[in-house]
Amino acid sequence: MRWAEIAIEAGNDAVDAVGQCLSTCGCGGFELREKDDQTTVVGYLPVDDRLELRLGELQELLEGLPAFGIESASTEITLRTVEEEDWANAWKAYFKPIRLGERLIVTPPWETPELKPDDVVVVIDPGMAFGTGSHPTTQLCLEALERRVKPGDRVADIGTGSGILSIAAVKLGAGLVEACDIDPLAVKITRENAVVNNVVFNCEETMPEGEFDIVVANILADVILGLRQELFDLLRPGGTLIASGIINTRGQDVADGLAAQGFTHEETHNSGEWVAVIARKPESA
Image (cartoon, rainbow, N blue to C red):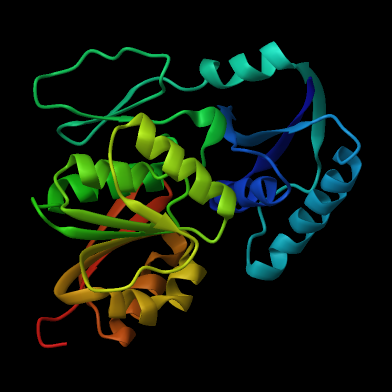
């Protein structure tokens, strides 16, 4: 089979949005290529009779991003045709094991990283995932989970993507993990990645029910603000929200919006142009 390699230039605040546009049009994942301070978001679609329609849909989605405040995504689509073997190997050139925090190792399945005795290994295949550990917001969430997950904790992962945060939470000792994503393909991929990592948790297209010790939401600032009531309700009194996918210019907006919902702001962590906001539901709530 031949594949169309689709490349779109994007500013840091637009990378996730462009990736979502690609996934909406049928790409099973996306990779980031960085050169000379420019990021290119790359995805793949099969060359078949649906390609022209999908590219038209992608063009419309990209042109509509400014309406959501996302201005730095190019609307120019660069295409290149690759063969099956080249497509399969293209992912491997860009993904290597990543060490995060004190113990976390995120690795693709074809690598064998050097491990310390207490390392926690999360295996993610970037050729089939939305979230590989390479993006700063994912790293911020993983590091926050490592600091905060205690044995037996109940964790909810909202907008799970590849399942990387849910898998890490289980391996860090969470007693129960519930994941959700509105994209059915992401749900499918998360379940597959759970099997690869030999962990068990539930993943659905609907929001989980019950109360949780930790809720992690690595999505977008406006989505987090739109879900702040639901996120508040998901937490037990005293529970912690880890919110990311937030460009640093929106960090204060998110912190203020969460405070208006009743959250107590605890910390804001930065990585380049991205932030993670850590907030707590009051014990009295």
